[in-house]
Amino acid sequence: MLTRLHSVTFEGIEGIICKVEVDVSRGGLEKSLIVGLPESQISVVVLKNVSISAPIGLTVRNAKGIKLKNVKIETQHGQPFILENAEVEGLETAER
Image (tube, rainbow, N blue to C red; front, side, top):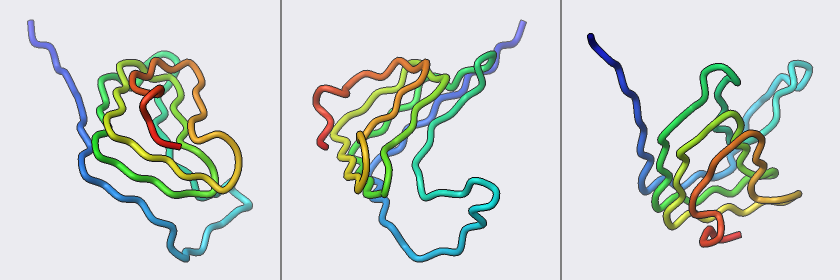
């Protein structure tokens, strides 16, 4: 029996705001997302040495095993982390 596993590690990424055109009629907004489906959650994602500057925080939805290591989130509005049905390690040490 074969099993397929997937995991992702993001390291040393710096996100910055740039000027882009977005079709807001379809709900487009500048945002950072880690989003799975309720029946197929995202799992085992590590953000390490990551800095994000955005109008709103990082949304993590339908995800488990998310690990933050040396993560900095700067927002113009609201909380830096928006969690919905998410298990996230390292929130207490993340810079805001």
